[in-house]
Every structure is written in structure tokens, then in C-alpha cells.
Image (cartoon, rainbow over all chains, first blue to last red; front, side):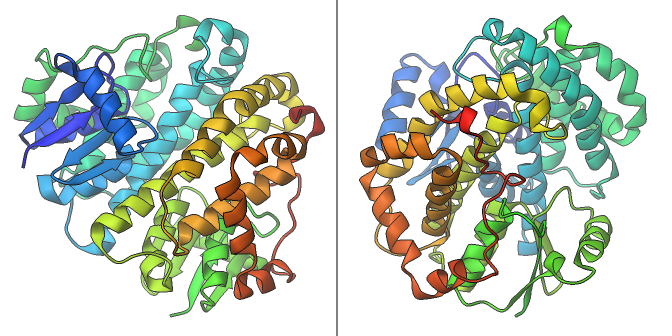
Length: 224
Length: 224
């Protein structure tokens, strides 16, 4: 099966959580919008399939959207999820909590409107980021630090790697100060980064660098 | 199977989407936190099962959280979802889009921090609500108006009823002005409200009234 992933071509964003799964599994996939005329193809498919927002995935006749649901679908097919129903539900529940977390990361720099520029919502961003750093970030990190995960690597572990990686980019000062409180997450991050296929991907040109158009953005005034 | 639902006892909130499904199906369930010593039982279960946030559901040995995932689980069991995998995924995808929408409804009155009072983020709320009314609300309403749903009533239709109902409470002026652009959603709302078990529920004391602690809140300064 050749999967077709549709996502914005110049950012990691939500699509990266799916790229990491496909890459770690060595799956056959096309990152459609990064190819010539790919953006046009993406908009055509979005309209045809009434997709609310990227990312979305084509797998044969199936077209599915929503990051966590795409991973829920791919997990057992890529060897990145258990196959029993209760375990799959548990994993999906954790992945949905990561989706919630990611909205809050995004809203640090877009607390007023996702269609407005950061520059048009800077004072509000400062307040929101302060609340995020002091209240929400420790809540999410603590939750996942204490989560009993077992030893196998699934979508969830790949996604937690990406959260740590992204937060280090966006909030370097904060993360340097607090990371030692979350030793299991840091160890997990390192373990995932060392997986051969993932390490090769991260070192390749396929891995888009973090930048100021993505979900994780580094604005020094939002860090402390 | 007697289901045990755990959710804040004084608001509709996210739990209401699950209550509507259980009520419409005539399911056997207990709304645990609304019983004597129910809040204590809820916190005990949250801690024991490492639940990030209510609502969560106990179904035999299974404990599951995340509103959309609970509905994904219950759907086929309550006769409120198709049973084929592609159709269930499609339905879940729509339900996840409703979850995204609901976060934006909530953030109208909490754009800075969910742990702060509305009174501590009023200027920011005004700006966020304006963006929501002008940009996000038409996008979501238009998306669901144009979605091809078929005739059967599933979780999704019950949830769309709740969105229309909640938005009419929170933004009465706005909804009076724009509703005629979404005739299918309005007709769907009325059709769901007329279902016998649901109508009985809505008229009962089990239906908590909308109020200023829930997700849908009416602040006249946020409406226009």
C-alpha cells in the first residue's frame, strides 16, 4: 500500500506526527504537497472529499483526516500500535490528549485568531504563554511522565518525542529549567531519536526544520 | 451493560454530548458525579485510572476518556453509528471536528487561561469572540451545513443539535442574524429535538440548564 499524505509543505505542524510514523515504519508514502503542483493537488482533494483541514491521508479508496485518527488508523498497519481493541482505544485516547496539548502550544502565539498574524496579538500572546508555561505545560508534561506506557514504541512514543523536540525549540529557556523533572520523557525522547530509520529521517532533507510558520515557534518574549 | 459516566455535575459541558447519546438510545447509565458523594467517586476513579480530564466512561472493565472517543466506542453499541470500519472512521472524524469547534467556543471566554476567571481576561475575550463570530463560526457552520450526512441519526446529529442549541444560548444575536444561511442544520436541530426519548430528556430535570460555568456562556459583550 502506498499512502498519500497531504499537508502543508513548508512546516512540520500536525503533519509531522504522521510523517514520523510513516518514516519510522519505513512505509511507502508520498508527501503530496511537497511535489511539483502538489499544493494544487491538495486543494483539489480537500474540496472533492470535503476535508475541513490538512493533514489528511489517502489509503486506497479511503480518505481520512484528523491527525490522531489517521494515527489510529495507521498504527496497527505500520506495527506501531497493539491490535486489541482496549489497547488501541487507550493509545488513541493518549494521542487525542496530545492533540489537545498541541492546540495549546499553537494558541500561545495565536490566542486571538488563527487567521491573524502573531504581530497583531502580541500582548495577548505574552499573557497566554505565561499561563501555558506556568500552568498547562507542567500539567501535560507531568501527565505523560507518570503515564505507564510499557516498553514498546508506538505512535504515542513518536509523538512524545516530537513534543519534547518542539518544546525545546519553542521554549528553550523554560525547557532547560524544567526538563530534569521529567526524566522518563527525556529518556524516551533520546531512545526514539536513536532508532535507525528515524535517525536517518531526522538527518535527511525530508525533515523540515522548525520555523516561524509552524505550530512550535520560538519567540524569545514568550519564553522565560 | 450499565454505563457509568463521570463528568462535572453542574454543567452540560463536554459530558452533555455523551448524555445525549445515552439518553437518545435509552441506555442504562449512571451519571456518577451527580449522585451523593459522586464527586469524591469521580476524583478517586480519575486518580486510579490516570485520567487527564472528565468526561470519562466506565463500561465493565474498560475506562475511557476523550469525548469523541467515548462516542466512537458507544456509537455502534447504542445503535448510533454504522458498523463498517470506513463509515465509523468517517463519523469519528466529524466528531473530532466538533471537539475542535468546541475548544474554540470555550476559548471565546477563556482566551488566556482556562484556570483564570473570565473577568480576568475580558478585553482579550472581546477580541477573540469577534474573530470567532466573523471567521470561525461561519467556517464551522458552513462545513457542517454542506456535509453529506444521509438520513440516519447518529452521534454526529445529536452533537450538531447540541452545537446549535448551545450557540443560540451563547450568541443569540449572532445566531438570529445568520441562522437562515444554514437551513439544513436548523432543520436537523428541530428533527433531533422532536425525537421522543430526547424530547423527554430535554424536558426532564436530568437536563442541566445552560449556565455561566459551562462551555457555552452568554456574555452580551461577546455577542453582536
